Image (cartoon, rainbow, N blue to C red; front, side, top):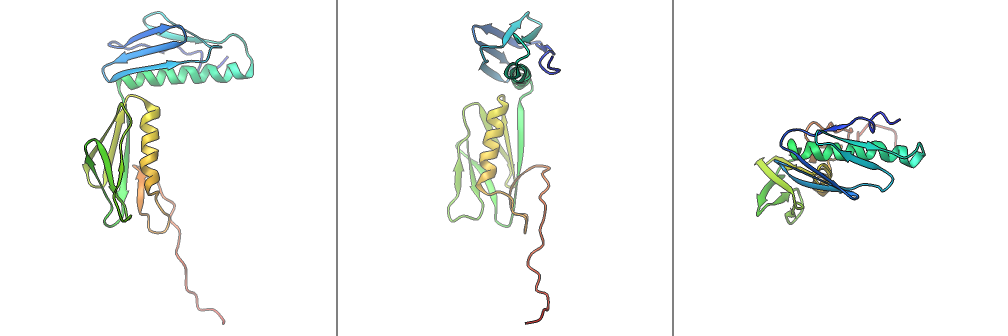
Length: 182
């Protein structure tokens, strides 16, 4: 039995869960999310918890069991607490700002790069070197953070670029001009 899949997902106060057909809708203070699970899985809600079960111990069903439970748990957590990713912009002259809900990145290219967040995701810039991405959907928040980071990934020689807060960039030594024989 899947250790993750067999654990019930607790429904906190203030969260409405509606399970119909192959679709689960979760509504809470931070937003609404819905998810259609694989037809092999069986999802039931009793008002206090959500239980996920599988028909047999086939390899695919074992994999889907834990996955389905984790995705539903992330939905419940997202509508109660929400998710947040913080990015740091490092480099001389590199900065970020908000313009009409979109992020404007000035990171060493001739023109600024504008990235508009998907629906349900909000972006803040408390200062020019920090970007805060928030939302109820964990996948959308992570995907948008990855897209912003991919505009200028951190490089190992000078450490310039856009990186996740707390991310360690492995620095490399530049060329060394040793006096050698010619």
